Amino acid sequence: MLETRDLTINFGGHVAVNAVSCRFVPGTLTAIVGPNGAGKTTYFNLISGQLKATAGHVLLGGRDLSRLSAAARTHAGLGRAFQLTNLFPHLSVLENVRLAVQAARGGSRRLNLWSLWSDHRTWTEEAEHILQTVGMHAQQGAVVANLPHGDQRKLEVALLMALDPEVYMFDEPTAGMSRDEAPVILNLIREIKSDTRKIILLVEHKMDVVRELADRIIVLTNGTLVADGTPAEVIASPVVQEAYLGRAPQDASGGHDARPHPDLPSSGGRSPS
Ligand SMILES: Nc1ncnc2c1ncn2[C@@H]1O[C@H](COP(=O)(O)OP(=O)(O)OP(=O)(O)O)[C@@H](O)[C@H]1O
Ligand SMILES: [Mg+2]
Image 1: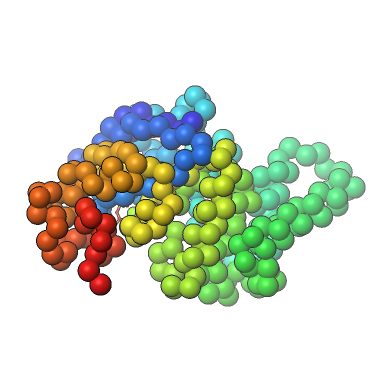
Image 2 (image 1 turned 90 degrees about the vertical axis):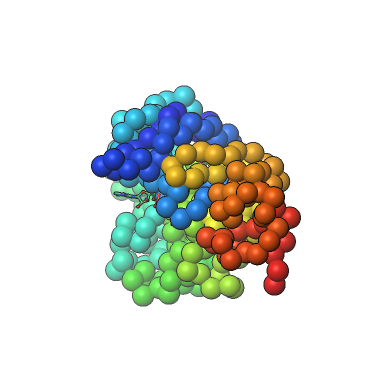
């Protein structure tokens, strides 16, 4: 289980994440939603260790990770999607994924030419398998720096899969992707979800995606956790209606122009089109 206890960060007086306590269990995909600037990405950064909390704790399997670096948290099982700055841009797609597999599996091996050679083969095969899964087998020889945006995003997921973490964290994984590219990423998340040992956290504005993938939704507003429940419960809750629509729930069936995101639904879950 992943748990945050009173997790808080204060940016020079602005409390971007405010005492968020939440537990995430394996076999569950939790969508984290909320308006722009609500603190979703900051919450992720506090969990993964990119940011150090002002107060509070992050625990995985009962172990307190709060004082660990981002790298040590990755090692402990927290998988945050790579950013391309973490890659070797002049190496091929396959080489990048193989290095990730190697980093995850090869840890403390003694240097021995024979085992190095056979491990290398195993890692390469595993990397090829992952690239097949993400539909990038044909591009495995391509240099990463030359990949189109959609393929770069797929590669980020491939690298995450190579790490095989206990917790998968996706922050708007299909942002900037074309209509035909996005389903590939969503299929990958579905595939990861089929492994019930995994904990998945997904920040996503597109409500149709949330509705389809999420087992649970939590809502952040102004850094505070304001709702937590099944998708049906949370979407219908007054607090969400108000947070998203900026008005009282009884008015929520009206126009949609006040919505901060075009994909967020009304309580009936239908939008005029
Ligand atoms: N490094 C930082 N220094 C100061 N303020 C920050 C920093 N990072 C984020 N913030 C502020 O914290 C608040 C939360 O930002 P965050 O990026 O977490 O929101 P978000 O919910 O991810 O929004 P979006 O949906 O637009 O991605 C914002 O007010 C933002 O300006
Ligand atoms: Mg964000």
